[in-house]
Each structure stands twice: as C-alpha cells, then as structure tokens.
Length: 336
Image (cartoon, rainbow, N blue to C red; front, side, top):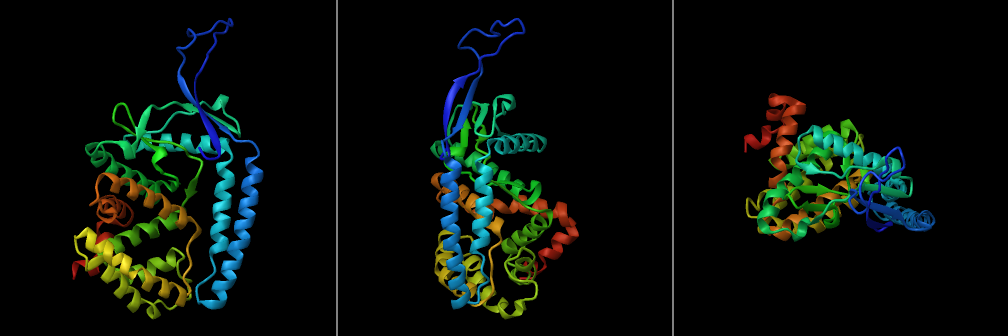
C-alpha cells in the first residue's frame, strides 16, 4: 500500500465476562492497513503542482491544436479519486459493496471481509488472505483465471458501474484454493448508466468493425467529441486508420499489434487536428484494463484483450438492447 503500511495480525475477542473468547494466538488473521503520517498534505501539494502543469498543457494545446482542453479535468478527476483513496472508511464501503455485488452475480472472486468496528478513516482492518500474486501463478492457473478477470472488470465497467481502477499484480491474488482474490478498493471509479450503455454499444461496434457508428454515435455519447461536431469531417480518416489497425491484421495478434503501433502517430495527428477530448473516468478505465492485459500477457504472449472481451460484451449488449438491437448494432459487420 503506497499510502499506508499493511500489517498481519490476529484479532483478540472477548466474552461478556471479560475472559478471552479464544486462546491467545488462535484468533482470526487480519490485515491492518495504517495510513502513513501527513499523507493528505503531501498528496495535496503534489496534486496542486500537477494541476498547474495541466493548466499550462491545456493552454499550449488550445493555442497549437484544435483539440479540446481536457488535462485539467483529468487531474481534477484524479484528485477527487486520490482524496477518496485517503479515506479508509470510503474504501471499506467500496470493499463491502464489491463483496456483496460479486456474490450476487455468482462470480467466483474472493473479496476480503471488512471488520468495520475496528476501522477508521486512517485504519482499515480486513480479513487476511494468504495467496500469491496472479502474475506468479503457473500458466494453467493463469489460463483459467485471466478470462474470469476480464469478465470481472467488464461486469464492473458495463453493468454495476463501480469500477476497481487499480488492479495491479499486488491487488490480484490466487489463494490456496486456486480462487481469484481482489484487494485494495481505495481507487474506484463510478460510471453513470448512460455511459455504461454507450460503452457497451461502442465495444460491440469496435469488435465488429462498425467504425461508422463508433465515430458518429459512440464517440459523441461518450464525450470524446462535442455534440455539435460534424463527425463526417473525421469519419473517413478514422475509419481508414482503425480498419488498418484492427481489421487488416485479422486473427494474427502480432500483426494486429504491429499495425496498432504503426497507426498511433496517425491517431495523434487526428486528435490534435479535431476537437477530441478524453472523458475523465476513461483514464482510470484504460489504466485498469491495460494492467489486466499486461498480467495476462505474462502467462500467454498470444493473449488478445479484444477476443477475450467479446463474449461478455455481447451478452451484456443482448441484455441492454435485445437480440434485434444487437443485430442492428452488428449490421455493417454482417454485410461485410
């Protein structure tokens, strides 16, 4: 825990008559996270400096490009999340909510229980989970659990709306029974229902190659382009770039990744030329899924995040839009 120190301890419980309920050393194991001294002041200073720099970057971008300024908004979103991350009572509430939500979905993912009476704003006491980082698991375990991890985060992104934004290797464990365990709920993003619906459609359009709808509808609804922007101006060039980067590589993952690297410079030119912006919550989402993909690639160099995402995205799209609506979303791909 970068903002705190975690200790392993045993709880001591007492009977009403004052005697210890369990013999010493036999109480349940717990993880006690204690916030480091003066963290709020240190974090506030860093965020203040970062916001000044973001304002300077926005000023330069506004002068040198047609891109809509968004860096200050990104820093503000990050700052709000950072202050909440310093509030362990908020983290405890997130942890309890995730534990209940995943249980209701029957997703076999373990979230440690919170000992609420012992937790405060700067101290969090949770169930201790013994395990190894997911990245240290053997290839067969990775092959079994990574698809579950993808479904776990897509369920947060497209359905529940509460998104764990910090799935680094230390927060994804495999316990002694081979179960995937999710830890550390300080940094979470909330995604509104309208954004979840638009994102589901965008993923379907992206994975089925319907770049026209992705650009004309989804990019506007998600806030990448302003509502009054004529997307016809940018559609031809973006369709060409995305087609070359995502479709022409076919099922060859290495070729697709090579093409994506090749088109990155072209995408940057387009983003500078037109009034693109990045929705504040999107930075946390891309960070989370990027970390998850990196973990997957340690066990399977051929892992394809697009292919792994499609089954859940398709099921979620059917739930939201219905079978007929999904077929409409896929109309262009089907006619190719």
